[in-house]
Length: 452
Image (cartoon, rainbow, N blue to C red; front, side, top):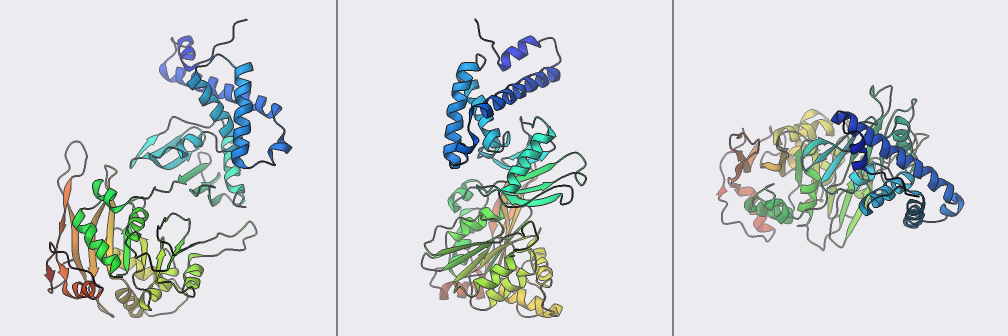
């Protein structure tokens, strides 16, 4: 007896007279039905008690073997590629996150945005596009959400419709359910960027070689650095690259909401905050970790991002013997970054006057690096400025490097060049006292600040 033949091409042939959208829907529905059929067959074949005793890799291998046998004996006639895709999808839905698994394994994707079961968007190479994937139903999407949040001992339902979680591989996940999300459950998955070396960032146009050399001097000379930018502008990627210039003999403590940094030094202590559990207990905040890190004898403290009262603790650490520390902040310009740091520091439980908080910011932060994400998806260092004001003075910034963009052409690609300005004399002396040589291409200037 001839086997039933089921392929995407056969569905297209059978529906040749249908409009293209209807044909695509018919193909998707047939594929979903086949996956659902084999998922039921797989559940009938396996022993769940025995499977529960295996680790994740062993479970996956076991299910793939069973699925291979099922497809060979009971499945339609498929090509080798279609058979492999079917096996992977069924196993992914049984163990992993189903249709999200291929998107998570795609290195070119940095963000996954699920807007209900039928629309999944991804950010690929800096641009948002509609993915060729969807959930079969809202119920399947909710099952995937439950699988995500259960791994971190959290729950999400109508009484608690928002939750932050993370996958086993570390990706950050945000979930919001109806009735707050009007068009169905919404899931946003932020994938961690792979580490880039400074040479790779130069080749990608993020900054030029001279600016990179100046930043390396600042890190080795133990300047306190604040990396500023908007969401998705590449702050963590740059922070990771800058950390490569920290000497290997220093003790470094990293503090993050979700561990994204990948420092290569020998003496690194990685700390991660913890959200409250289902009962609302057990939370450990970034601020708690910053305070605790001061008792751990760090040479440098690297905080993934400051966004609250921990900013004051970070500034205090920078001012009290932990020079060379680095952190990031959400802001659209260097001047705004300092003002925002001041605002965040005032959110601590210390009742300090405005001038005292301003003094902490002035004395703590030496360098602000501004990143920007352009409309073409590119991420660039647009400004490197040095904070030359001290004490309770108004903020005064000296531009060290800036990106000068050309008028955008019809291809919507941003072009331009990085321009290096001058190095303040006081900072040049600090670099020399740290045993570093001054770059010959950058003149030393003792004049007034150049930032408006």
